[in-house]
Length: 290
Image (tube, rainbow, N blue to C red; front, top):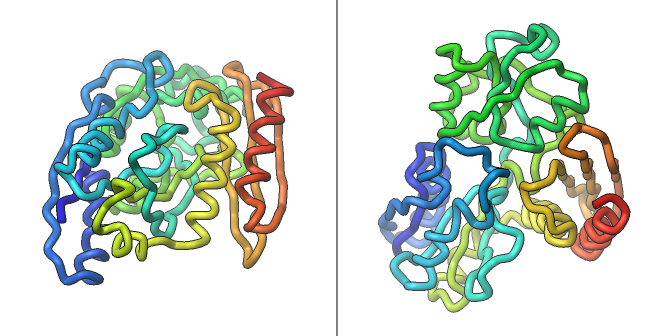
């Protein structure tokens, strides 16, 4: 069995977590193949200034279609809204933390006026504006370690990152503050992984055993809102959901790029109705606000 992954430390760490579980389940040794994606090659542009559809996944998708790898591991939030019809999200393992964190020598309230905040996320920039943070945003690309180093070396005063990646890499000593998920709402699928295979994969059944039912329900529900909304990462939208037994609570905040709150939705429904409810949320947001 061969797994494909991006080459960053976070990507390989996430992939090896999945590989260890599969090797224990199957007793089979799994080979890892590093594949460089378009997103890995672009280091000097805001993501929303380029065509970001599948930017971190399409080369891995093609390797699955070609049969050069048997499965791929992605951060779920990197998946494009529309998947190749030959491929399947075969497993979504249990989710990590969904929160955003501040990396800085300053706390959020102590950030000086006109401090520079490095980010390549239109969502994070808009939430800063929503909370009237008088900061100057500047593009900041690179892997987790690179962005932390750039802050520590003074290239910018702060940045905002996903706690999940920090936890997986064991870099928690760099976290100055953890934001409540309702204050800076994370992107759809944050903290979740997607294990992709070809729909006709001989390993489909084994890999599907990695599924965590509640995480799968949450992640696919959040993705369904984005699909119905049709904006990808080009519009500031934060989405998270939580399963509680047979029910799911869905939370969504849609902002304008200038930081104006356009919609703040909280809905609770049965898990069995999660996708249809999410689709109706996305459709209504598109009709009413965009």
